[in-house]
Length: 138
Image (cartoon, rainbow, N blue to C red; front, side):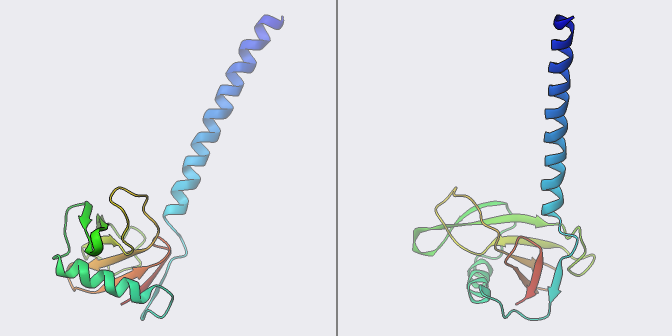
């Protein structure tokens, strides 16, 4: 009987691990799409100045539409993230958006949570210090 129980236990363990991974992946996915995001008419939080400065540089580069690393002043790089889809509808509906990192770093380095999002239809720009949980109009 012990021989039969071992395969069942092993199968149950594998199923449990698989279920944990699946649930964990769903949890991570839920974190990246905040349900309680807020949009503010002005930017007065820490980081607004850096966001304005980054926006000025991205704007002078013509707001690149291709996702990837771009040369930045002082020999660093910054990342253009490509299309922002506005899936949660915090920003104006029907418009097209691009997202860009705020803080430069070495090319290929880990990205942080600070972004600017540019409305390509109106030219308006928002700063998100927390990876799209909140938006501050610049």
